[in-house]
Every structure is written in C-alpha cells, then in structure tokens.
Image (cartoon, rainbow, N blue to C red):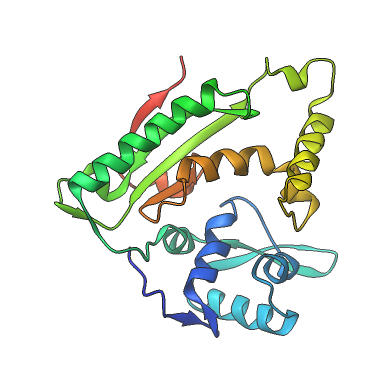
Length: 222
C-alpha cells in the first residue's frame, strides 16, 4: 500500500498517523494520552484524530480504564501502518538493501553493544513477488534478550536496562516517557536494522498482518 505524504487525516499529516498505527501492537489498548505524547498534539486535536480514525475503520474501541475509552488498531489500521510513502525502487536496488539488512542482523547478534539479538526474520509483501519495481521491503523480526550479556551478570535485568537507557541519555538520546526508556534496547536494534532506509519497513513478528499475507522465514536462530 502506498500513501501520498501530502495527505492528512483530521489535519494531521498522514506520516504522523502512520507512525501512530505502526507503533502500537495489535493486541494493545491505548488512550488519548498516548496520541498526545507521541504526536505532540493537543487533547482536542487528538480527540478529532481518534474520532476520524474510528470512522474510517482504522481503529476500534477497546477497554475502558478509569472512565477513559481506550482503543486498538484494526487490520485496516495495520495496513496503513505498513504503508509506504517512498518512491519505488528496482528489484536490483531492493536486493542490495535486503542483503545489507541481513548483514546488520549478523552484526546485532555478535556485537555486545546490543542487549538484544535477532531470533527470527520473516519477509512478506511485494518483495516475495517478481515485480521489477517495489515500493518497499516488509520485514518482521523477533527479538530476544542476550541472556549471557555481561550487563546481566550479577544485576537484575530491569535495572540493567534502565542503566543502559540512562547511558544513552548521557550521550544525547531523548526519551519522552519511562516506557521509551525500558523499550530502548528493542527500539535501538530496530533503528539499527532499518538504518534510515525509506525502502525498509521493519515490524514486529507479532503483527497480525502476517496471519493473512504470504510470508517466508529467511533467518531463524538455531
């Protein structure tokens, strides 16, 4: 699915909407505060966006917590979260990008700078076809902790992860929330794997879109 980067939903740029839908898990409920924090919107604008996303079928009502309505994305919302705004590339270029990605997978698994490793890589979408041009390369990854990492020796994992995030802060990394801090080891790996490529879309292995599309396991840790 391709999107026009100039498009807006409820006056919010489509790329920001995509960031919201891509960043939430299919099984997770989230509220207005998540939208205001992630997209830097006022509560009023967040409400309008939520209402419009529900009207278009991208999200649906979830649970109600402490009198606040929470939401979760639909399969249609997952599709929008996967959408590409990048220009199409040739199959040759896509193959090069894919090869470089797989090399970074190897680097993550052997480099002690990362607390997490890649357990599985699944390719899905148009890259599995034979089209001479592609809009993007959809890849899902399963990550796990490096149980034998030196940082985990003699220290509880939650504290080791927080220490790791605090070190990143000292180096200039900014975290908006506490959740961002404890998610940093996973986010760091995904950012490294993506390597700022607009052609690569890196997703979680738990994304429900994998239940309905053709996919192929291209790497699995033994």
